[in-house]
Length: 200
Image (cartoon, rainbow, N blue to C red; front, side, top):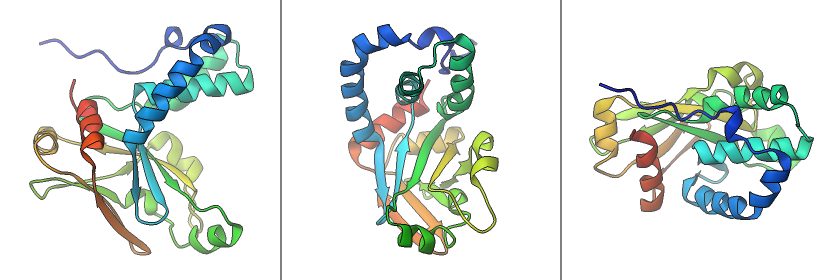
């Protein structure tokens, strides 16, 4: 039995700045469409973007472009930060945004939402639930006892039975936090994207 190759990015997957400028317009248009299908609003101000290899590559390319990162060592540092967000088969990965923009809203809500990164869950067609787990590489930087961050990185690890259930029926994305309880049924185009993440 052969093992599926890793989806993680390597140095050779990241174009240098001149090469990236040549592809950037088309690649950016591709990512905008991709994120439209992978973005899910749950309630009034929490949004998830389910990541894949392309969305993470775009993040690294844009970071390298903005910060003029030209060395292999600099690119490798970005790979080390963002590669954990690429899901392997059987798992899903998302960036969770608390989309509050005014200072009063942030001051009011961020203390109330401590622990929200552990509250998302997928509710599958067979009634099973898959809880989110914060990405360990980012959790220490983002988690405080008295104040949450506006951005969190979470993973959903599905076993074979959960993958089968996710492949054959609707999926609900829920946030079950004492201060924020909302849920939404995923749209068909989002389901198609996530099912592609779950399969090898």
